[in-house]
Amino acid sequence: MSTGLVAWGAGLVDVNDDGRLDAVTMNRVFDAAYPGSISVLDGHPGAVFGGGGVTISAPWGALSVSGADLDSDGLADLAMTTTDGCEGFRTSTITTRLGNGDATFGAPVTLNTGFFLCPRAMAIGKFNADPLADVAVTAMSTAGASVRSGTGGGAFGGATLYGGEPNADDVTAHDVDANGTLDLVLCDALGVSVLSGNGAGGFGARITSPAGASPKNARMADMDANGLRDAVVVNSSEDALSVLPGAGGGAFGARIVVATGDHPNGLDIGELTGDANPDLAVSCSDGTVRVHENLGGLNFGAGTVIGVAANPTYLQIADINGDGMADILTADSESATVSLFLGNG
Image (tube, rainbow, N blue to C red; front, side, top):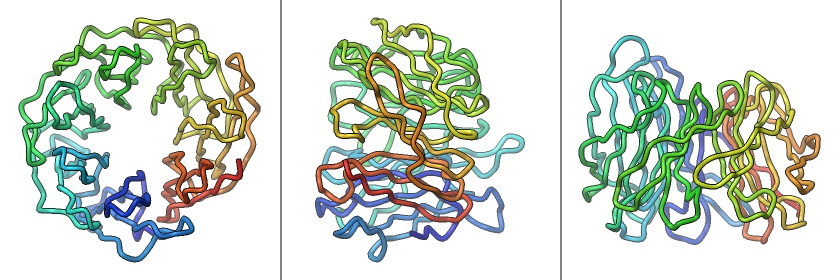
């Protein structure tokens, strides 16, 4: 399914409130002659995306995009980080568009975050007790993550910086310690770091666990059914994944290496084989999409190639066609498409 421009990322969210997941893609080429965009592909019965969607301008292309209910009105909104370049000091923003519930969006609400270099990743979540969504962002020139509280109408307040290494590849929000509040998980040169949330919008000191070379795309699940959440990250330069056993308190044990295809990029966790155990799905630069079956005891299969796409850089698991079985969506940067692999259980 075509996105019209190089698709570097995607996500699944119901933007028109019809009960079906729609695909939101992040399109960019880092060339001023080709302005970037966000494509919204309307989901149709039978797991088809296409007509009825919209294209939203994004300067030079968004560096990250998320679909979430930012203003607590029950409708999906969009948030993106953008920059006008990644050489020298450039203007960077957080831009939101509030959803109308019909796959259209309101005018952009733009927060100029200053002259920091290339915001890299963004996590949306409710970090405090109010009903508004908050945001955490990492950037190439900023150490750690900048956290901003939602103030309503798609806007965010001032930034609070929580320290870490510069150039963090990833930030995600998870309830790592299962205490009912969201924590931040950072991937940077030191490994995987957890900053425990206090439920009032603040975060504690980082607890860092080694995770191999250049970890990114952290995903969390209790992989071995012991009541502790484990972390899984991509190590692209090692052609591998790292599974980090949860040790409690935001810490993880020694990594378990799972060899995969050439230069893995996208990663997600979901039940794909019908045995109720969470499995691993990964997309690789060699064009393969692979499933590593959870064999129990933090052991994983060698990886079954379930399909081929054109340099799939992003992967997400969801039941897209509503048949009760998990499917896989990829964003394919070399073909300007998204690919859908329907699960058979």
